[in-house]
Length: 449
Image (spheres, rainbow, N blue to C red):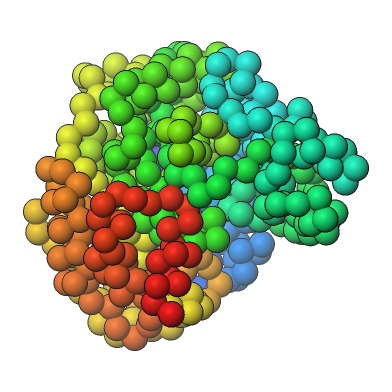
């Protein structure tokens, strides 16, 4: 096992990795910007190194600064968390060159899954169901129009090198295509430095379902089941749950088996998430793979009792899957996660500032992952996520009831948060009946107008 790890992230995920390190007897080194000097991940790490000013490009995304900190602290490995440098193949390659273990997949696999059209081809080759789509990058508006006519509108144009809704446009007619194609191309270039686009048949109001996988460095891959992530606004997830009410045990086993064979064949290692869309016909179609731990990983941990971050550390240290899992994966009950963001709950505008009161809920089946605290400051430079509230119940109804109670007892003052929004979602009749899809939030918000 590693003796010392640098955590190349901030906020709740940095604290989450530090907790896993402490339980495994590993010393954790935090990095921080000037804006995060008083953050909890800095306080609870064994060592902490300031790597620059608040701006991301000058601190957390500054690869030379991160590597310098790792070398100064003489660490064995780097855990990138999620976001930031977690899916940066160049960063993984630099770690490798410097003799520092990158806790994640190899650079080649990160690149493969990061180039969406190549990832589609790799998945299709090994039997993973995919949506009808372009064979590789679309070279021009004319080519895009030709392909769209062949499969029929609507189609969706996506950035080959990105995600998170950037460089993505839904095209419903021939007249719209040229303008939206150019918009997506421009946005992709600005966001990812790569304007390449590909196209897929668009599924109206699908469910967004993802499968959590773990892969050791000996060719063994296991699926830990699915998460339903359909509650999202502008392609940003707000609430996740596991299991999905629409995934049968047979479908779960079928997709899990296909993914295990596919990811073993491509040489995948460590934790990863394979994302699918489910149409009204109940069939799953691959859209992309995230080669890192996900924000919503706790819902899988709650229903499987598998510590995914400790699993990541053990796998990166060379452990085989049987040592990591110590038995078959068993799913128990139902889990829900609400992302608590420092945002106005109706306007969705960021709300930076000082937290004057912070009272997190507790009780049976309740977990909270956060780095926020009373008198702490939420800086304006970073993502608005301040906490993840996760509950588990014996079934979905109990989980919903428990989450409602926990949200009521979660008090944050001094800034706006999305807690009131989540309370309204939990009380919604469609949500409680499991009638959800990626268009849910638009319909839900329209009701309140």
